[in-house]
Amino acid sequence: MQYFTSAAFEKTLKDLVSDRKDRVKKAIHLCVAFFETGELPHGLGLKPLRHEFWEIRAGISDRVIFRKSKGLIEFLLVGSHDEVKRFLKRI
Image 1 (cartoon, helix red, strand yellow):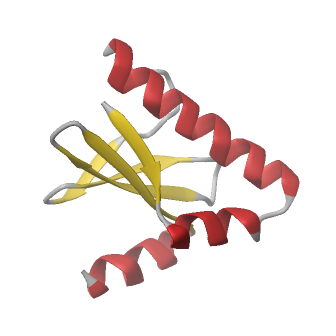
Image 2 (cartoon, rainbow, N blue to C red):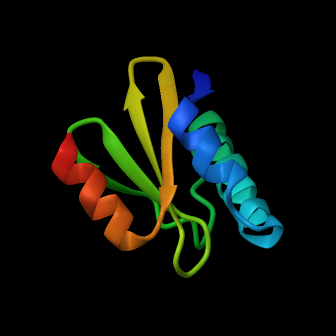
């Protein structure tokens, strides 16, 4: 499996304060570990959204959206529940 981050993801991550950024990085690490080992860690909140888009939790208010396709996971967005809803309306 290959893992990438989009430019939009990098920008939203860069704009976060350090504790939120750390939670996002931890959630991504747990997500990658899940896809590599098959063991779902408690609290990740992994769920399918639509088609190839998925969501994980990075704390109470932050969500990470990624696209999963054959052999590739691309992290697309860090945002609140409302930002995720707006993102899904645009795709």
